[in-house]
Image (cartoon, rainbow, N blue to C red; front, top):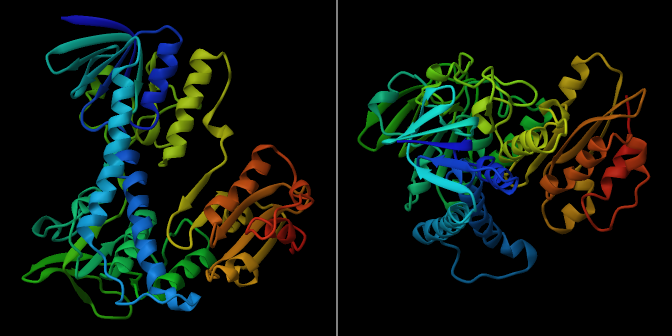
Length: 457
């Protein structure tokens, strides 16, 4: 039996449900297909569970530092990992169930739970049913990449998904990958009480950032007792009675590390390999990302791709913005494009990193004449008062037209304070406008105008 809809949305991740809501509100009939868990990566294996765990780890860390603030905690600090996991699971379940109930109760929306596969450009099969629509929106997300490293098939390993099922504390967690996912889990588990080693193939952590940001993050980690091994050019694995042996062969340090558990955090891949996209004629790149134009249209008329599967962003906020772009173009007669958005993201370690626009290195590579303002968090009174003075703030500005090109705030509140800079950039206002703003004291944000008044070549 074939059923026809005005639109089909594949995937209930960040972009899909909101798009279904807009389409049905516009009077369309919509089929939404989800093969596994409603909410996608963010709700189930990404932002919601990890930030919940980060919060628990931060509480443990603050308790251990209580004496620094004149607070006595008798008997020491212990972490109940089973209770930590239960709290995380409860928050995730509440988010997922609420989303599913909203979708199933949505007028003109039919929810299918199963695996959708293309039969032709506008026909999909879900189990024994066939559904068609003139408009199809692919929002299938991504999953952890398991690298083809020597011995990886001989040892047990964790990914960002399976590690969320742990309710025991690893004795020694070895993390392969020194970028966002790996670093958040590294600090989290160190604060829970594990010994932690981070192994990075490249010469520094978070290679997309400037050298000074990478060095500052490494200093934070090493201060907390996390071992960082960079330049690990020959990563390999071998089973051991006590866990897993990880070979690193770095320029210095032991050539092998024995860990009780290993977390692979070396990137993600799109969930596009089993959708039958060849039957629809949808073009992909060599990594499986769906090729789209500036309005997120694929090469096949009537098919769009949103979220992680299109390679245009790997964040919840970029996926949601994909929904906004598609809704504006399809429903509102507006013209919104992917290139309208300013790159921004956060690294939710402690202290957090808020990043917007170009890095200093990227700005220099454009050939522009630039000016830079910077201030260590030790000179931010709010940070000192809170006992969290690690990190620094940096803003990059075009020397000729005063355009803000980018900023990095690695410090307490940095993930929030950076939005003032982002909003100024989005409004296409100059750095002089932000420089003359009066900010509230005492905050981290109040130093931004001060930094802009101290720009140097």
